[in-house]
Amino acid sequence: MPTERTHARWWALGALSFAELLVMIDNTIVNVALPTLARDLGAGISGLQWIVDAYTLVFAGLLLTGGYLGDRFGHRRVLLTGIGGFMLVSVLAASSQNLGQLVAGRAGLGVFAALVFPATLAIITTIFVDARERAMAVGIWAAVSGVAVAIGPVLGGWLLEHFSWTSVFWVNVPFGVVALAMILAVVPGTRPVSVPRFDALGVVLSIAGLGLLTFTLIEAPHVGWATARTVVGVVVAVAILAVFVATQLRIAHPILDVRLFANRR
Image (spheres, rainbow, N blue to C red):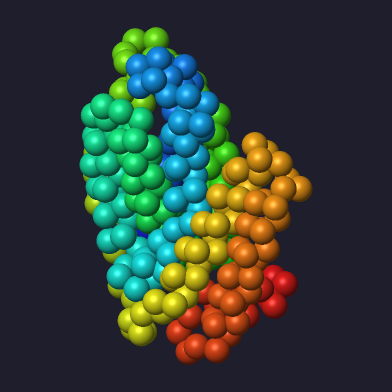
């Protein structure tokens, strides 16, 4: 029985890593399709930039919120919701007829990726209770994230050799079906012990602070690091995040317990 439980944990890690791979590949898979998109959709440099950055911007801005929702409603449930939404928006992105629709689709993918990514790590830390095994599992999870960055352009290039640019989005559908089947088969469900009051202010401040900071860093190489736009953007983002930290220290059930950062371990 212990051996079976051990094997089940590692099978679950494989399923969670595949789900993580699904959303992380989307960070880079579209890059090789940019010349084709420029031709087919009439996108300029700015438009192409937003095809790439809309995903990153929304993903980064909602990452903390995605983890918080998993804490409240159950990480497996949020993970399945994220994958299902990711597949649906992939279909919409593949069906885009103009640049605006595609950028909106990429932003939508970022929304659901922000549900999937933190849920995979949260479940891993739950099912691996042994410190040594947990460290190994988290190491594998982190390695998969890094490998996904390299897989994206390779997979995207292969798809473009055989199909149109829409294939870089359609591919998420069969991969998503596999991820859903694997998770339903081997990943145990978890329920929160208690559901505290929703920290609406923390959610708003985290999205605003992280979103503005990410947007400013994305734009800085193009508008200049020393320009007023960049400097003001960073200052305002840091100010919002400072208010976020202050509010998190005062409430009973914060979206993020910032006191954890005082613990060096």
